[in-house]
Image 1 (tube, helix red, strand yellow):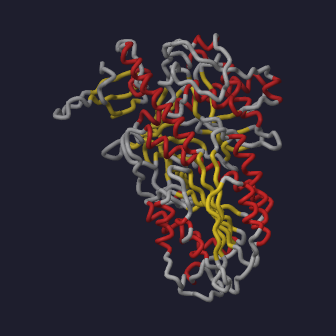
Image 2 (spheres, one colour):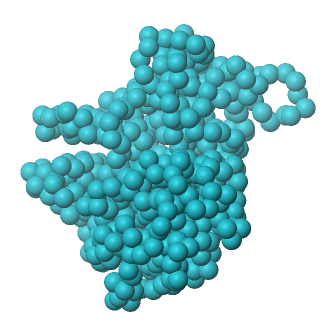
Image 3 (cartoon, rainbow, N blue to C red):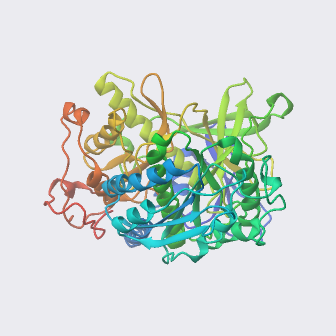
Length: 587
């Protein structure tokens, strides 16, 4: 039996015996492969760093592992606080046709502040404005540097007149060139909201009449502007007002930005033709930027390995699958636990099964998230699937351990959902069944996750750090109730959060959750333990579904010292201000 400190890799997955074939990796000089057949449970214990029945981690080592994980959680919350330091810049085409958008931005800023402060308790927001026009205007630009004074912002924007624009292109490059002159704060979440109904000068960017068909007459180049976005680490959003006029230009911008940034940056777009939806787009842009910034900062503070992106290009179109080969893989799936108490127990051993599996996979990803690439795929029967893989290089991002942790989260979340639906006699909350694929056709095994394709408008409903989606019509309240219920159903041991997916005819189809657990050594890096639970309840407001289930919003106090297998002290906690997160005694 291997000790837990020895390295290993999966060499084979035996579908007959439901076991992993392991390769000992202690002696790099030895050419002899030593394979050991272990039960799935033992292999998973090794993967997750837990104990097996024959190899117990010493108490001292367990305490050190817990202390290390708590330090990582501290750093994660440090990143969360830092990500809420936001510099928001509005960059607007202020030529003759843009008057109503200038007016709308002025009005929407106040609404935006109120909505952000409701979800981000540490919000430190500053906002600025760059006005640009065209070369036929005497004063083509004006700037308001970052300020936290709403009055200063509103006064400045109210003074702007829409003027100029005697051709179909505007001096966009001149406006973008001013971005680097703004007083960006160190380590802030930096956001540009760019609204325009006309493209930049240069016939390569559009098919309209242009007084400067050779491009910017002042010599400003696309590369210099894209490099500014990269060096300033800006989250850039472009609102199409007349999409046919600006879509070709943004496609060119994005292709160049992807090359220069090695896929680390992109210009996100939204359709702002309907001006009444602008406030919603502004809110989503800021929220997604804070989330992205939090992920980056967390990686810098916590990850042991630098984030180096893989080489890839995004191709959104679905491939013609009949021309693609079937790839033989091994598919692993966890069985749904029999009970919540069992699967949250310190000594729980997951049960899994594996089988041969064939799949056709697109050669290029169609989408990317903060950490993963998503590929169109079909199985041999033609069923649509989504295959996901880390977008970063390195062993820690591509280990089987990481994929098993993600699958365990989704499997346990599915068990919570089954019990929740049974309790209510409704099928509101449904998680897709995640599985792990192992491709052994390469020198090193390649790992993927695979699940059913979720069709529809993909939304995130809450996060693992207290953010909750605004819900004006109450349609999404049941999801917040579900997260609340998981805490109460588990007697304070766990909570399902970071819930995302689509609304379907009957309820929601969800994926990629996180689980906060008192045992911080389980459920991967998104498990923020008791501090994460506190952050959820800091922003959660009980609704009619919470009241129907007689859920109680807990108060949190300083825990007495516990071990990772003894969360019973949750039953004797004193009330304190829930905005103060205590890290000292969470196991």
